[in-house]
Image 1 (cartoon, one colour):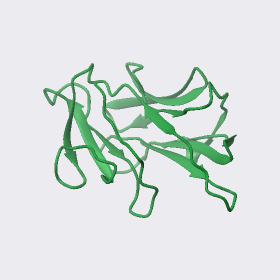
Image 2 (tube, rainbow, N blue to C red; image 1 turned 60 degrees about the horizontal axis):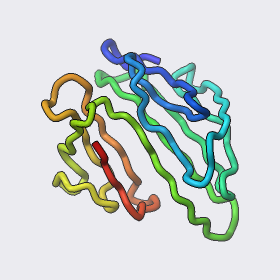
Image 3 (tube, rainbow, N blue to C red; image 1 turned 60 degrees about the vertical axis):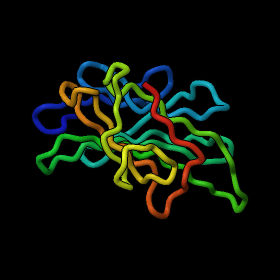
Image 4 (spheres, one colour; image 1 turned 45 degrees about the vertical axis):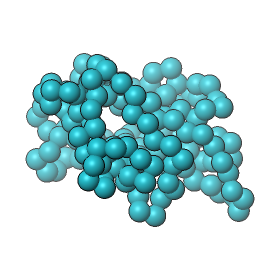
Length: 160
């Protein structure tokens, strides 16, 4: 998939995970359900090849899948990754979920902004912005943690 003229993106299957990689093969945003090992995935293309959708996996009673989209309009280069957790039951399900990735900052990741206007990462933040320490090189990333009506995570942590 291509996001504009400058960023080439690849949806790859690495060790059973659907990952989004930049052209230098830096894997980003690996979804991990804590109590499970590698889960084999398959995917299909939608939106005329702009979206890769993984097959639905039943994990701890949750129906889980991932969608990675690169839009073909606008003048900004980006990809959107959405992890969908659907509870088909009437009972509450509690599960630990980790989204792990190499942000391309080589251990120099800084948070430059959050949805509440500071640089402190908190579960109440709807989104956080990260970049490398010098602001050049790898692109800045915006990570949407949850929506206004979405589940608020117990913890959010940026490491590295």
